[in-house]
Amino acid sequence: MAKPTVFIGSSVETKYIAELVQNVLDFDVTPIIWTQDTFEPTQYPLDALESRLKASDFAIFICVPEENDHTVIRGQKRNVIRDNIIFELGLAMGRLGRDRTFLISPRNADLHLPSDLLGISPENYDQVLLSTSPEAALGPACNRIKRKMASIRPLERPEPTEARSDKADEDEPRAVTNELAITVDWTAADFRWQYAFAIFSKNQQRADEIAEAFLKSRFASSDEEVAHWEASEEYTTLFSGRAVDVELIRSRSERYPQNAALMELLGRTMQHYGEVEEARRLLLDALDATSDIAQACAVIERIIQLSDDEDEQPRAEALLQKLNAVPRSTNADEADFLTALGAIARYAGFKEIPIAIGEMIVTRRPSDATARFELAFDYSEQNQPELAALHYDAIPKAERTGVAWNNLGVAFAKLQLKGMAVAAYQEASAKGETIADGNLAQMLQEAGFLAEAQQKAEGAISIENHDPFVVTVLTSLQAARSKEAADHTAALKIGASRQKVRRVVGRAAAVMSGPDILGEWSTPDGIIKLVSDEAGGYTSVTEFERPVENGVLWPLLATKERVQVTVRLRRFGAALEGSIFRVTLGKPTTLLGMVGTEKTLLLSIAEDGDTIAGFEWAYGETAVTWARVRVAKQIET
Image (cartoon, rainbow, N blue to C red; front, side):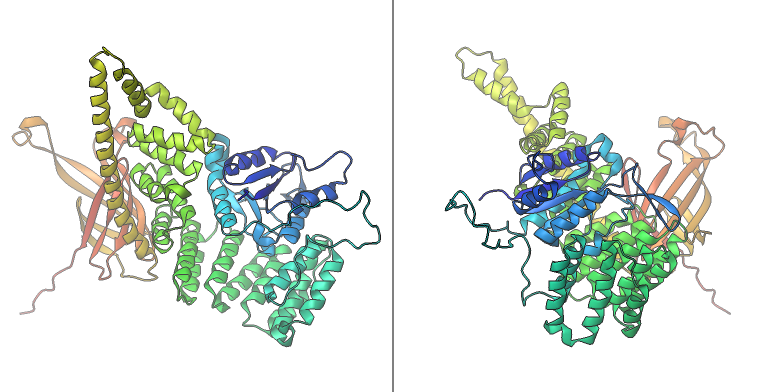
């Protein structure tokens, strides 16, 4: 079966990103950038673009706000995406369908385009990582797109046939084959999306046909569906450059105050006109009204995008309560819930807890290679190669992309499994992952090519009167392979042990309430007392006296030192994240002396509130358990 054809569009300035995306996708599809055999010198550009889209199965657009393109919105100057990119995006969605059109943009970019209004959520990449490791930056986004494309069959096209004459019959009407036919199977959402595509593509005739078909469909018998259509139809006028009749959308929403979709539509309208507080209020109301967890997750993402840097923790707590109120019944519902939960945790400023929640997501979606890749990448960024290798290894080899093979090689290299690292890099290189070639070149300088060494040795041993040293080399190679296999097993065992603790924390994060932890706790350092801090978290500053080891005679020459232990914690559900800082008092604090004194804490609170358990780590990881100090009641005499 021929590989699907993918059109990649971008501005001239972001063409280099399009080329990187082409390199990442090249093994699985046939990617064609807009500059490659699309626009011929004598051809009208729009006709050329339509011809290219007609021959494509999917389309990807690189959407990056341009530094030299500005617009003024509510008195504020903002960078925007090129108009031609916006137009081509809408044209592609109208021709191919929104499920076949993808958008790639920088993470946290303020796009100011109606992409998500058309039902398409951008795939993001790390702008900072792009400058140093472009394939690694774009890999996760491209992998998600590849998985989505793999779930959709390429468009079926008739085999080409010969023309009957050199000149076509000018009186014969041309069949329209590049627009989706209106069918009785269309949902109300299909009507709204296709109408928006037509308006966005400046095809008023197509828009009128869709509107007429909707009013004749089964949905027209529902006053609430008609109200939703009218509000959506009015909102779509944004794409034609006209002002929106806000009162029309508001009146339809007020007519059906429990319709979450209408509230969300009104909220997006307010956002368009810069009324951020009103938009946030309406979106929160929509979140209260919805009973669909997928819609709730989408609304939460939009609320987070609207939020500023102030009062993140209280707003995150409010979102948590609202999210938890939405009913969930299926495994897919739970996975969506956990995804939104992780987004809220990141919004609240947590770094470790969202990763622990990610562990829970892969338990719900064990075959989701993209989710597992992102989790492994997070662990690699944390310098946790055991956990990174555990998850990259869990992606089936057939589903492992070049980026995943490369990153698995990085994890193996960090674990000093050089032979396995080389093999992984070679797999990545075979899939066209050029960053793996760089990694292989680096390892060539450090040796470790066991397979190549064995090939050389086996070739030498077949020669008569070979040197005895060759046998020694083969024996050592086998020993090296055995050692690597044992080290690999040991690393995965460590990773599994650490994963288990993180999944406990992930489950605790999903608990909306739990026991209070104020008071005294018995820790490996001694008794500490947790008190509330001004930021809504917990803190403890305690001094302890401990013996100092002074060589083999230290029991005879015992001395003591005072150590100050500072604990700072923030809470998310029944999970805790923070730090523990130990410093010896009375000694000069040098840069060298500071190393290893501050460690990260990731903990979970037991249901009965009597224990807190988890781990602390910096360069190594140590399991910790705290026990609540209960004050015994005195017996009255």
